[in-house]
Amino acid sequence: MKLLIEIDNHAPLQLAEFCKSMEGIASEYSQFVHNNQLDLEPCEQHIYVEKITQGCFIVELAAMVSSTYPILEQANAIFSFGEHLKMIFDWATNRGEKPELLTEKTLKNASHILEPVAIDPKAQFNLQITDNKGVVQLHFHTDNAHAGLAQYNIERELKQLREREENTLINTALYWSSTADAESKVQDRAIIPAISPKPVRVKFEDKQLKDTMILNEQYPYHKIFLVDVLVEYIDDEPVIYKIQKFNSSMNKI
Figure 1 (cartoon, rainbow, N blue to C red):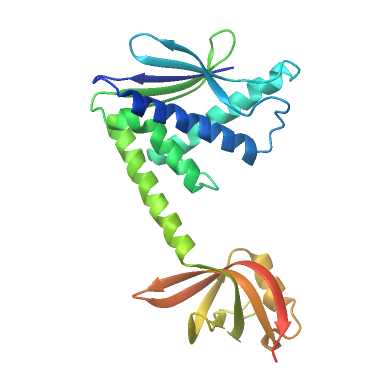
Figure 2 (tube, rainbow, N blue to C red; figure 1 turned 90 degrees about the vertical axis):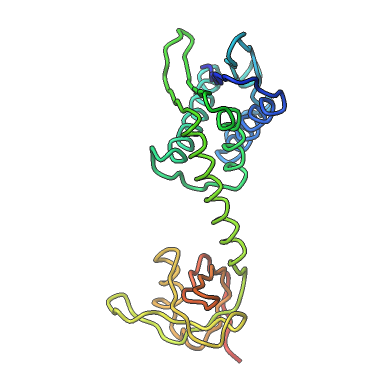
């Protein structure tokens, strides 16, 4: 499998911008390998430029792997990485669903990859995967306008990520003010002393958290729970505690 990146530029492309784009691909490939626990040992977990075609920038990229590593698995890694990039770009250009686990690093890498097209009004960008017979297995195309849209969506997502990080408390104390069973329409409310003395509505990242902290807990009002929680505000007032992780509990003194 070959991963081909074509940057069909109209204006001269600065070397720094081209290198930043290629570094974005290399950085994302390394993170992709790590996150998906691909066993590429003893080879290096990097992707390399094999050829640049004169005229527009047509770059052939391939993984540098050990000769002892199965050829089929090498091809699968390249293809999966191409799918990963296409999914991100499809979402960023409003053509697909939002991928799970979009990290700050991935978002920045995606923005860097598209930068040469975003700064050139007449530029085009193509990404494709071809097999050893030259048959295209996967393709993504975008122009300057959609690259700009992608960077706008990426920057908006980065801002939301930063806000979530700023408003997330780790291992903080919470105790219940009111709770509801599975059938009740009454809202679960809790107090987090570090935020406010007032009860605030609670939501859970998943149902298992509520089971652990309320439904399966014999004396939930006698406990203090240590949790990771995202706090949502309106006009500086906390309106929702979204419990993301239960860490431990202790009896109230």
